Length: 378
Image (cartoon, rainbow, N blue to C red; front, top):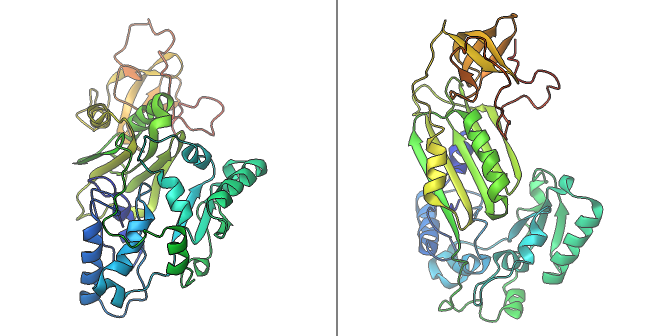
């Protein structure tokens, strides 16, 4: 597995659901900066592990596949030990046309084009997010780059592994026809230097409600330049890991009972952002502001909760279902204080409640609730 940033996220959950061995190649694209690490890892795996069926190499979304494939032919020890079965490219049906049409500086390659050009199989994913007309347009664009590749439409990346493994589809002869300089190890390629990654990792816990609010604002303001963001979080008051990922304006995340924090495991948070012209300091600050600290109120304190209007109540529990406060209102209803700030929970105002100062983002509310979305679950 190749991570573009300094912090690995995927391996944090993959290791818990797979028996296979995972070797990480970190902090750089496997096609250039850490390319030598790939050859070393392949040799080490061959020496120390016997009887394995094969190796799956997952590169970053920014990798040029040519230098990666080249490793299996120009390194004599690797060439004698391995054969390249095929190159699989996963395509985001909703965003790929924008990536293909992107104008790059002179001398800078468009990685999306390169990945499609070398693909033996294309998984056209997220087909549920676009209409048939768009899918046909995407397939036409793919065919214009690689007329011979097999295109498999998918949702959530679900596909029969038999269509991807032991396909014996990589042909050095065909690649050399397309790229006569394929085996030239002195050739160079240049990435877009405006694209970078920002990684944040710390021991401790986050308020995931506050983080989702911040991410929502970030998406509204910088979605075009956010190519990928993902994380595995320890959330205060929750036994399961919160796992999220996003691409531009698309976000998905939640707690997964398959990934529970072990008693002996250090609770920590890992987040990675990949995009163009990222503000490292601002992203780090935004994440760290969501880190859990001491709460302002304790159980039994009288407060006012923002339920659309400021409503008097009493704190009855701390860190309930990932929320800093569970509050019983005067009418007997119960609500959550999702973030420990004056925007959501405050000291009593002596009858001067008025309308709550709602935030522009409200992802902490139950999306399925049509009435009283602030209400806590029974």
